[in-house]
Amino acid sequence: MISNHHQSVMFNESIDALNLINDGIYIDATFGRGGHSQGILDQLGDQAQLIAFDQDLSAINYAKEKFNDSRLTLIHSPFSQMHVVINEMGLSGKINGILMDLGVSSPQLDNADRGFSFNADGPLDMRMNQTIGLSAAQWLAQANEEDIANVIYQFGDEKKSRHIASRIKKFQLQQPLETTLQLANIVSEVVRGQKKKHPATRTFQAIRIYINQELKQLTETLENSKQILATNGRLSIISFHSIEDRIVKRFIQKNSRQKTLPKGLPVFDQALEKTPFTDLGKKFASKEEVTHNKRSRSAILRVASKN
Ligand SMILES: C[S@@+](CC[C@H](N)C(=O)[O-])C[C@H]1O[C@@H](n2cnc3c(N)ncnc32)[C@H](O)[C@@H]1O
Image (cartoon, rainbow, N blue to C red; front, side):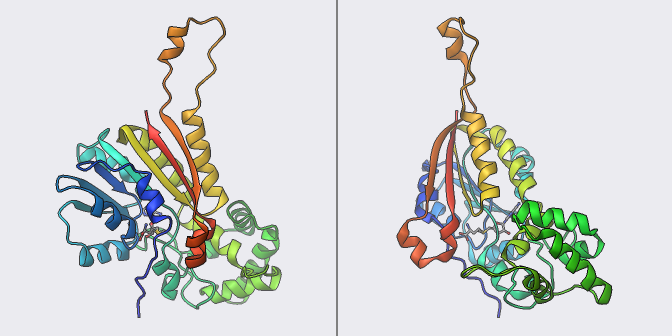
């Protein structure tokens, strides 16, 4: 049976950070199973709009079946295309807030046939958008050992990346590498698990990030948010690992830091300096949430306001 359960992380904190205006226009960049979207809709008035993106067709199909709200527009697309869609809708510069709850949803992890899980056997796919691109199995079959090692090292911080890549290539000389458990077993022969962490955690994370181009997607979308957001529009972004959070942190810092002006300039020239964003800080999930929802353990919420 297909699982559709997803418990939204930092639900109140991330929605509060949007500072909702009754008739505002908002974007949920990562609809998932719509927990955050529903929370936003519940607080908005009749004239408001929520535009929700997800690149996973199963998320969009779920939304079509379960959500019947004329204020909600669903877009099946990577969120990196947000600026194009919003421009076509004539809403560029009018968006009052963008929520991003990054990474994969529980249904993607829990349904073995999506290929994200090292605990259950399924085809080694890992694409959020199964309508385009290479599956993890296809990529691992055509990539060379060095490229595989680099991906596992860069996106997984895995010290044994070269050893794992070499084992993958050896395995493929004997038989095609096609399932999640085949990959999990190859990694487990090389890496020791730590505490409750499965040995293949970092390798699966790295390949998933690469297959879905997650960091490129995030970087481009943050940059494009500048043109989409209205003055005082909010960015509310939840990330789940340090590589992702570093991108969000650096973007907000870079765009909210006042440049030091050359000494001797008159004060009124300094007043002209306006940064694209104001940094409104970061939050972690409460202890209580972490005890109820393990996924929230690694969540970091960062918030910024457009100037
Ligand atoms: C953590 S879940 C979001 C859960 C959602 N906030 C909820 O409360 O149900 C992340 C979702 O974002 C989608 N996603 C991730 N990266 C994406 C991207 N670049 N473009 C569009 N959707 C993306 C995934 O397919 C997944 O459904």
